[in-house]
Length: 279
Image (cartoon, rainbow, N blue to C red; front, side):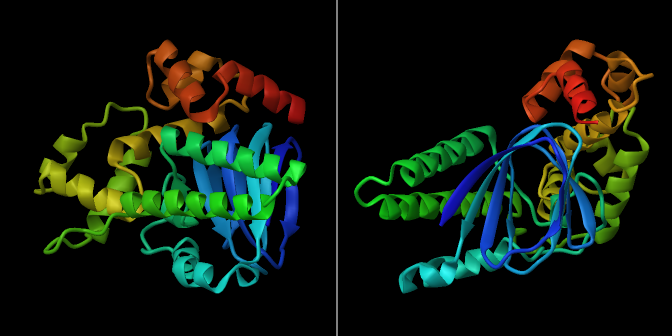
């Protein structure tokens, strides 16, 4: 097992490898090209790349990512029995709902909460330290922390794509309609409870089926989409930061700046400056 930390400012062309690889984004944003889909990634996103599958990164502003590479077949038999199912679950989407820039099912991305992302990053830093220092039993320590990381990711996946309660079923028409409604009305103040009642379903049921299908509750989905769109708008030098904020439906500039920094790790102005340096 090997771990690397990339502070990437240049795009990574299409490539493949013969090991399992999982990646955690910790700062910045990039476009991940995988499974014939281009997906915007933000801090807290973690995903698995199976062996021999092509993928690439389009870097438009400096991004920090932790990259862990390992060969499951070289680990003890008990490990494969416990974690092989998880590896399969992390690479195969559970639904085929519509393609949208905020839909984590597009590449079966797990989005960690801030505390979980911090824990995983801390554990990866320990793995990196053990890998560098190579003290007594360092390989065992690395393996133990990899196991803990995979457990955290597995639990996050179970929460994120939680199974629907019995008697509940997905309504693809409602989900697809809601995704289109969000994208078409990004500049508006969207009331999801009102939207649900307009479609004769309860707000609670709507939140349940939307999260199960897309991986995010409606409000978090909306915020992610707004930030992804803001990243695109920030590339246009003719738009002020307030113009960008308004273009994604956030009319309080201070709130927009706080939300952007919270999600991306840079303020909008810092992000724009970094993007200029890359280009």
